[in-house]
Image: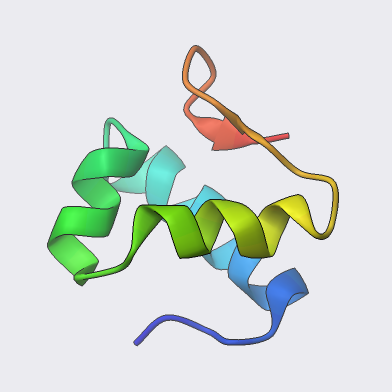
Length: 57
């Protein structure tokens, strides 16, 4: 289950990316999440996905 609260979502996603998934695309596929919605939700907090670091910064 993916958290709905944006701040909790940020922590959840970055932890999953660090520990389990080599890319955002793979995380979204495994969790059946919409990548655009995820990016937009975190963009509202001024976080963007950095593929080189494999995390939202």
